[in-house]
Amino acid sequence: MLDRTQTDEQMGAFRLLRRLQRDFGRDHVRGYVLSALLLALISLSNTGVAAMLKPVLNGMVSAEKFGQMRTMAFEVVALFVLRGAATFGSTLTLSRIGNRIVATAQRRVFDRLLNQNLIFYQDRHSSEFVARLVLAANGVRDSLQLVVQSGARDLLTIIGLGA
Image (cartoon, one colour):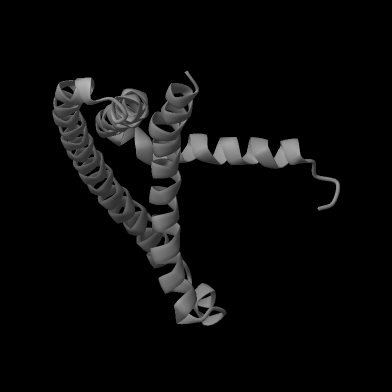
């Protein structure tokens, strides 16, 4: 156990993510692409808010630019409405995909449990079966959603704010 390197563990994690994507994510590629696009829109709106902040702060000190401030206020409202709609859309899409993945994973685990022999059940407590049904399925969903959210929203937000 101590002879395993960090690289071995990372490669195992990448293999696991590839397997999860192949087994569960492949059926939901369209939904994940739609959610990634909506998350990218959220990222762009976050970057847009940061870009609008500089003129707002500079315009507050001079009375001549008050008309521009009113226009910019409407632009900020529109940007936040867009961001809210994109957040709602991505959350809804990821929730629907996640629920389907959980149902599929639970069905697979339940089918495997039904095919086990009696000795398998005799050696284990019933709470272990419930934990397998609930935690394993939710872990699959959470892993795939984290990859999509990190890649689409968080990475693009960091790039946009850096630029």
